Every structure is written in C-alpha cells, then in structure tokens.
Image (cartoon, rainbow, N blue to C red; front, top):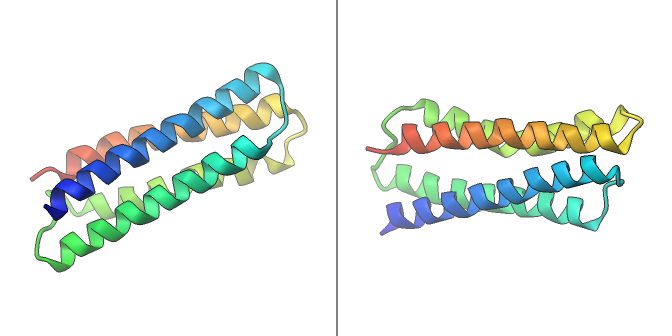
Length: 122
C-alpha cells in the first residue's frame, strides 16, 4: 500500500514538474516576466517532491528499498533542478532567457524523474 502511494505521489510530482516546465516555455515564447504562476508552480513542485520523498523514506524504514541506490541521488536532483534553474536565471536580462532557463531545467528534471522511475522498480 505504501509503495502504491509512493508511486502515485511520484506521478503527481512528475505532473507538477511538467506544468512548471511548460510555464517556462510559455513565458519564453511570450517574453513575459515571472509572475504568480511561476511562484505557484515552484511551490507545487517543491511540496510534491517533499511529500513523495517522505513516502520514500517511509518505504526505506519499512524495509523496502529501490532497485538501485542511485534512486536517492536522483531524488535529490529532482528536488533542486527547478529552483536551481530559476535562481541561475536571476542575473539574465531578458524574460525570454529566464523562461528558457526554467524550461531547460524542467526538461532535465523530467529526464531525471524518468530515471527515478527506472531505478525505483523492484
């Protein structure tokens, strides 16, 4: 049951990252500054990753573990990629560049999440 919950939370996390990624793409295309949607998608990503991580830690405590221990490293990367991309773009001058940074960070995060799914399956 806990494993199923963790999987569903991981799917939710992937969905929030997907939304945040496309928010960056839309911002880059329209050349708009970051706004409330940018902040809300960032918060949604962080909360969903934290909740999924808590479920994963509960799985570890209960004795279940991922197929590969690199799963834990990928989880840490997934937590930090969107905020890292947003922070790295602060020094950029154009809104388009900032949106593209968010988009690129989201794409890398989606790749990491794909790898997370592969390393977590027993």
